[in-house]
Image 1 (tube, rainbow, N blue to C red):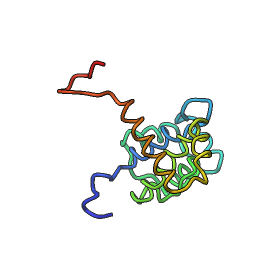
Image 2: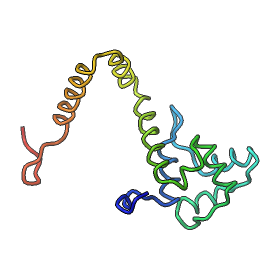
Image 3: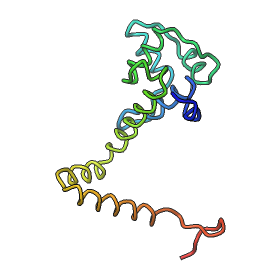
Length: 147
């Protein structure tokens, strides 16, 4: 990673917390530390929920490779997610896309766009961009625009 991209670096706690927020089973809330610890321990890597809590709070930042491997497998990410910021950003982009694709309307839009010409895709993207701008609050001098 270049020195110019230093601002995109994240520590272990931030990366782990992001996984807890981004990898959420459909139809329920996020995983808890206890649930993650039980599944990883059952897979043969003993880890406690309190240790996971310490990792998430940044009070421990040097877990064993076995713990990192267990966490990576649980969340379905490569172990390099915790070491390589380029891998972290790539995986986070994939997680964001997967999260967006949970919405059936977004899936339907993407599926209907498949097969369109490049010019049609560009027009559709421009339209979506304009709709997004219309949905963002308009401000003038820091005050919401009345209208």
